[in-house]
Image 1 (cartoon, rainbow, N blue to C red):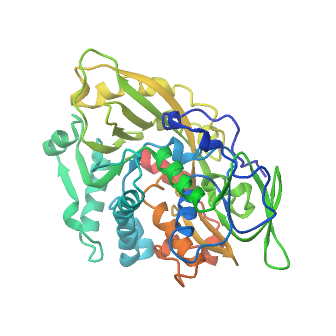
Image 2: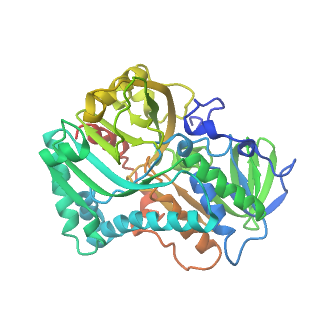
Length: 447
């Protein structure tokens, strides 16, 4: 089997410029011999699971978090800075596969993340540069626009979807004006946010550390084995730990710990950049966060408070070459010509940048975990072994409440996992052999 562990020398993202000593922390010199709960993964899923486990009542007495590299060094620390629910684009396909109610549950679940995140930030007084904004998906091809329009109307006709007044569809000249993109044929907008992901995750883990969380970075997990007494033996490069309960929060790297997820959660390499204005005239600020559905490309963008831009995608540099992106865990390299793709992108695509000049400040790569059927795996794999992984580059508006659901179940505060039914780990999903990852990615860039 291929190695699915993270590489040691990943590219440095813009977000990791905020890295602190805490990001490499080891709470104790040596690993504990036994713990109540062991969380594998120090990114968004692992951090938020720890946060909810250690909040409120029924806290486990001992919780250990193991991270193969430094904290938030995986996909969350390399993403586009979005907190952008998706509420319409899969309406037709999800309804056909899961039914009208389950499709709406996914939409409502994602939208609920905006409220949950705001409550966590206010309660803990966290500063991660969170901004409430509007998400704006822009379609520049006729085929993409027609698909978006059909899915939007389909979603609006679903009686179970909540807060429909928040969603808007714009066509033709209205789409061009709203998006500030001269080639826009249609755009769909809805509530969204943006933030500095590294600052959020590290701040949550700092809170957890004050509540007794033992954090051990640079400690890759090599294997787990269930013992006759029901506990788990977790083997690491620094020794073994016995855990009464186990949480796998490793996303793209899950197959390194759970070989059964090879070909079920596929590592997919992505590219992102930081762009600054280099001319004498600063461009007008873009007020939306964007999904940019261009012919043969699918990009994403936020405008930061300082006027700079986080822009990711560059699919044309990756997708013609399967070996560059599919089943790849190496985030130490970039795709050839990736920097060229981002060069001049803003002037070419946005009215507000046509009198300005952009410069590519930084380009990096990251590894996303795409599930075989397009939805994350959340729940109990076997007794007291839990998982939340496979978020497919769309974890920000899904992980928070998935982590809360797993934590509530583990603490005995809920008898079920309070997530949309299609997210749940089931024998049918685990036994399924069909893998639609490549087809879904190719469909995205053809919109």
